[in-house]
Length: 52
Image (cartoon, rainbow, N blue to C red):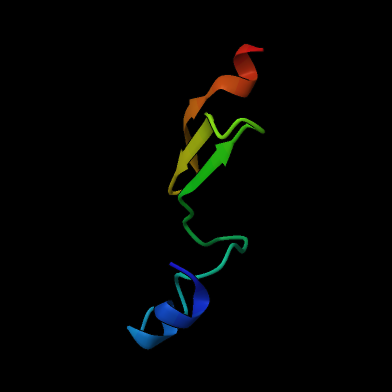
């Protein structure tokens, strides 16, 4: 969720942007659009980068 929708549903103080102390879900893709890493609430779930 980006900042505008987060503010619209009343979550602007806790969602919608990456900042220290905020939980984050993030998917990192390779140049070929393959999943390289997944982070849920800031914690690594899948991290193929470490395997290389």
